[in-house]
Image (cartoon, rainbow, N blue to C red; front, top):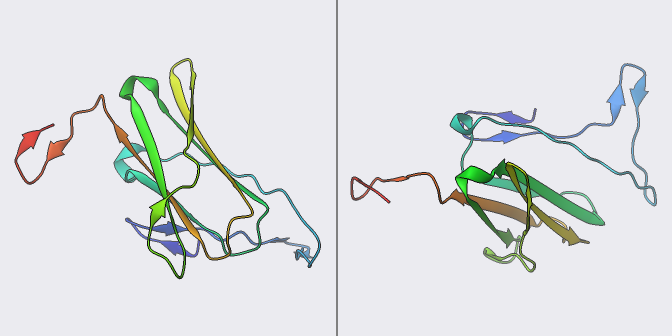
Length: 134
C-alpha cells in the first residue's frame, strides 16, 4: 500500500519476492490482472486509475447487483486537460443477478487518469440539500 486512508487507497505493484526483484526492462511486456471487492459502506461511487507506465491496453470491469439498476459513466483527465467524457462508453452486460460494465482503451496516454462513476437507480438517495429522498 502506498496510501491507506479511509477516503483514499493507492496500491503500487512491485515485482519482487523473498528471492529478489524482477524488473520489467524496455521492450519487455507482461499481462497484469488483479481484482478486489469492497463493501459499499467503505466505498464511494467511483473508481479511478492513473496510467504511470507505458500501457498497451487498460480494461476495467465493474460488477453490481442487477437489482440496484446501476448506471456507469466515466471521464478522462490528463496533466494538460480538464476532465472530459471517456472516448468510448462502458459496455453493459447482464449476467443473471449481476450487471457488468466493461471499459477498454488501447494505448492510454502516460499520466492520464481514468475515472468511472456510478449510480444505483433502484436505491433511494438522500438529497442532503433538500432533506428529501430522490
